[in-house]
Length: 439
Image 1 (cartoon, one colour):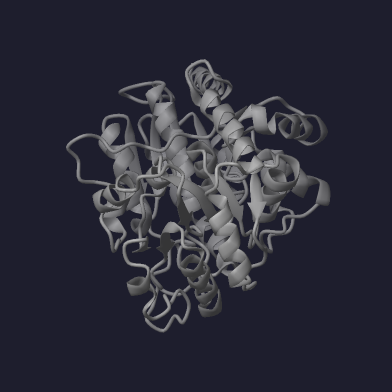
Image 2 (cartoon, helix red, strand yellow; image 1 turned 30 degrees about the horizontal axis):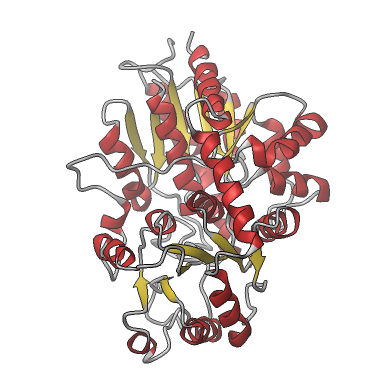
């Protein structure tokens, strides 16, 4: 059976793990490969399909979604297909359920007139794809949603502290034909070399980040924000930022798709924002059900800070916010995607690590690079509102040494993804190696 794709270059099967923080980098990578002449099929379940709409609008002839029903699992509530509205302890169940797509994918591959020449999947939570790739006799490449600094630390410690999946991170790394990191050599090269030389024993590692986010094609209506509710439209958020006279004077507060703050934590953040006197944007998740007692904005808070702050409930244009001249600092959980967005935006990161890789990212940025400030740590920690208010106020002063380091880090990241930069070249090499598989 001849391999390749009918209308373009080498055909790659993309199998992202169903969690926003893992799926979005996969699509950003896919976009870069399509721009370099490859074609792709992306595996999604029905409730994750909307994430694919922006890339479909840009590359309609070279990419196809493969929509498969999310497999049932006794421990997963009916209707749940991803990690977005469930606690972290559901992760092993989502992993197990998702692995049941093995057989449907074999059937799809066998019936395809021009099947894929390789698979790119999640390095950690789709280890079952190694078996699938072996069965289909094609290489499997793992995309790490985490940086090499974190992965090398987990290798050394012999376990993955992010979840109760003993050994799976190592199985995924060892058995994958290659590993792609959404990071850049200038930041992570030493740790990538360590992984290569001490663990995986081959040189098929690529640093391709920070992966540029997908821009919506002109005159299309498909986008992530069309599917996820937002209390304030994108253009109103940007207009509010445009109205700020002082550059780097706004604090952005957001904790990603997975973190749910308790009422006590919400009270502390609200009190700190109100007391600090800073201009701010605070993105708050919409609770998944009415009985959820978390994520409640304190009564009267929005009225008291009207004009000085925005509270966005639901989807927020985070990349655009962080890249705006008016935004100077970012209170964040320090998940790697959010960290990269903050680095590219050139803002000062105020780190509140809570789980998974957050602690490794904070240690790297605060202790090793001096490019961020640690506010507190812990998933259930309630920060001291008075101390937090002072940190927020100080963070928008340009004289802080951490801000200077953050700006240096931004320049390195931007240079890496420019044409001729280290990550740009790595993407070229990756695309070329994948293209060679079809010959």
